[in-house]
Length: 570
Image (cartoon, rainbow, N blue to C red; front, side, top):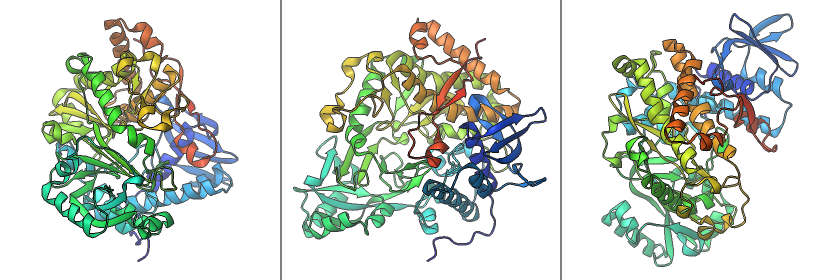
């Protein structure tokens, strides 16, 4: 079978080109950048000139009009292509080849989706599980938003969230000497899989010479399991009797929008399972850092204790978390480090809320196929001003309070946050995915006594310097994480949508956020503490996502952007 079928109608090339140029402009790759009053941007990548219709939005996010990007060719201008931009911006290199391949694959898989999978409409009415497959747009900033390296067309349709197909995890039994696990109770497997299925697996383990008194079960994503068939170490373990493969286990699951996190298709209230996949998507290989897997339950338990210690997280700034409560990794210290791992976390539908009252926050900035914002019915019902004020209250303040009052930062991007709402009226915030991305500054913790000693759980943390894992060296590092994910690469897309569709100037949106943050600090006597994070300085750092692709060997310290909150006081 060929890797790709021919897609008859290309639809995504203009989007990929637009996001590539926007990211390069945001991250400072352009020279001679000018914006005239007619909303035309002109710039050069090295010696090649480009132009497009567009503007510079909040936090230095350039917003170009799709289909308007042109390149200077001699004395004339012609429509630009992704290949033109890559040739202009950097010399040939292995990194450029990978970027080119990821951009091409993103285009191809996006077009494949458009060809085979009907686009959902009226998505604001869908429940949370349905939205995980219906919010298929991918990253709104990164041009490699569907790179999925190694996915064939068949893989994309079978395992991508867009198709909503169901499949089962593959059971592999590893000798206990290869496994590190943190399970909440001795009957974990019986509880997760059901007694009958666990008895079947127990019998299979005996028959395969891998009894459960000396072997441990680790479910793998079937795509990952297939990839491992050609791995020399995996083969060596199999031949030496250190692992046994027992086929599909458990009930069917399907991919969420994060692709490697799987929801239970039979019972949506059952756990989500985050799996390791040796696949490149956006800028990252989607394996699971084994040291983060090991501490996942401890991080969730700690966060839950901090929230319980502060009644404001119930009364004023409702924040619910979906804890990661079980974690298994195999092959630590080998070449398969991070390739064999799984984390179980609570499903949103286990919270007992109506499914249609929850929406991932990235859905707020999306439009349906007819060009209408998903949130249009909500704004029509509640009014833009009242709705936006309530959204700031519900989506910003819980994350901000956790940082400012408690010294803990969450990677609060749109997929990691779920808005609890009633007919579109925001009522609470639900957060998830903490094992790698939660950060803290020891000196700023409100309850340092609750902070777990991660080095006791995993030796990787013992002599780790600050800023490597969870422990940060300064308030600025924490602010970088929180403002990057919550504002720069999340709510800035909403402020752009509201300007475009409702005429609400982005400056007005961010002035309202700033005013509310100032009021928050005043209400709680937190002015000094909030100022320690310097959140209103004129320039802040943002993560350099495209630069990491173009120059992976260079340490990425981010790029400076204009802070939309700096001038927002009012």
